[in-house]
Length: 479
Image (cartoon, rainbow, N blue to C red):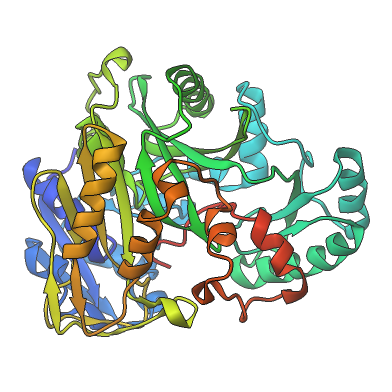
């Protein structure tokens, strides 16, 4: 269907896609902002086009410039990566109208699953367990209070178009609900130009477990097990692993089948992730579906010995997937750490600047996805993640040892990073024993000054929320 792919993204995911395309014999086009003129994805693509100034809205989020770059270079397809335009249905629709293949689901599928209220309704129809809550948008505080009283407190307000924890408030009583309703609506309106909220029963300290799925255009669907993403701070994932410490073969099968039923409901095409909350009794509840490749996809690739990005491209080319679900089993224990250029001692403040030194860990079972190098200038305009450190071993215990060793070898000079904080987590006895949930950081590190939320709104309820809240609706990976 196409012989050349334009990558509408930057950083490590752009490099990851370029490598996959090369292995498939496809030519590549890199687009870049003026801030990324010296970026590695520009150097290693077959062609490159500057699409504007550093600000994302004038470059990586400018659909007209990206489409123009594809037309000038005769690219037959666009891969959006994650973040930026990856889940933008309008962009996918523009690609279709211009005769360019969008490597992802259809515009209709993105719209259906991107609206969290509609997605929840679809999952209910597919027989997927969902968290009890409002049937649709809650229009007023009185409406929200009526639903909260029906299901009982605590409840959580969430933005219909939300992501990254924005427009989200946990409420333990009517007073918090009234205050939280107005704050969440305002935050959602500012972040997404959509102030609509919905309400759910809040599940105390669950695990955040997601299922990786893929579907082709021939009606074949497969799942590649789970990723446990419960180690989060302010609704942003820091560490992911598979298999999950709480998983059983029976639960994996049930969750995998539920995820596939949900994908079948909309005739889903390509890779996607169905995200669930799992409680102490191993009950699971649908949270959302992400219609793109995810940051943490390497964990699944390493554990299951697959190439999800190449499969994603093959599906877009109209190829048929030839897996057998019974053969898709985890062969390794795999863990990923997101290495961010952030000052942990200053409330995880992003730290753009020049890398004066860099040593990348190696050895069997160690993978580093990155697009930085010694002398690279980390720009202040984009996400602070500079690398992903992934390890695999035959058991979780061995994977933990390998990760601790890899973190000790990972040297970044010139800017502070989150590596020391990852080392603290990997030496914590509860994490080592797999005894964690989405409140792990807020409870186990609550006296650690690196978790000071002094800049967060609604400070009078943060202490209570910090114990309970660690939900994530989607990651703002490159926004």
